[in-house]
Image (cartoon, rainbow, N blue to C red; front, side, top):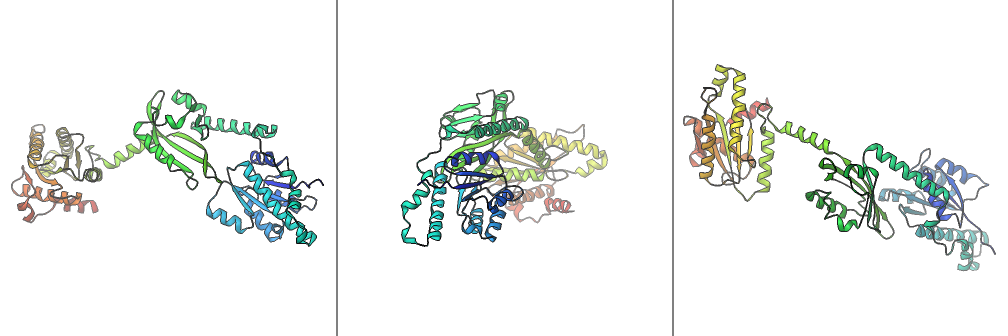
Length: 483
């Protein structure tokens, strides 16, 4: 007896998705297609059309898959009509909701064609048994052979990727062309990595920007040796790739890539991994490179403006503190010296020579201090005429004393015939304080001692400065900032 050919309803708003499922099942089943839940509902409720199983996408216009299942459940249709949900979202929330609404099975994209065929076959087998039991009323007469006869048309067929229909091939080619055009319009560089062949394929934009072949083989062997990725960024990319899993399918990382004409530029790498959810194997990586070099430069300029003193161009208090804290954190076991400088009688300079001259003095002092220190040291202006210098890696009083004398002498060289002197308080890291706030307070105490002893001198923080009552310059400065 010839087995009855069952009917599948494929519901998906993307025609290419419907075409691929049609390709998988068309030899063994009658196929009906619907582009949304509303079309599917009309087909299911049409008495002239007998649907045996629904392959249902969830995200669709007009009526989505959840709404369709809700209506079918209310009407009692799901009691005799199995629904297999096919979705790219395998989150626990989606799975729980789909099962609670009556889904018989959930298939996570991408799927193995032979596995989905087997699952559909098994589900139909179960429902056929229930049909036979219901119609015959005699469970003892039902055998496994009866059921298999009903499904004999579905036995022994493997999906052949090389036998795609003209329709599916056309839709696949159309999809590729759309993606190519969109990639060129956006300026992004698209890529696709096939795990099995270990081959990376780029869009045409890749050759235009990097001047290299758009197809790279043996990627896993070459990735650590390539010069296109900045050396310091290779491990960043590898770590992100190794973090991909069935639970964490996406990644993004900022890396520098060697361009054809402009050297290394910053790019953001976006990657979506595609997995075979049945065996937990990664099949492919799809992603893009987006040029963010200009954006990075703008952020750097904004940060520099936020961290720098507008008058002198050196660090303001925020920038100074951030940089010193970073040094303390990264070099906690090394030494350093903090110098707190305050120009002597600067108010008289402003009053007698005017604020324009006073501003010029401050700018010149900043330049003179910078000329005395290294690029690894930190210089900042934290108040009207107060400056901080952090000498990184310098230990011992002799080295600190030598640098303080050099700065003091440089400032005393004069400003257009007008004498300018400076008082300095010195605190050593970490002996006098292992934290920024403590260290600057110790230098502040030493500075007050210098001021109190006649100005134009430097003083190390020690027992005499510790025990001497003092009025903090920082306290006044903090009060001014609060106001």
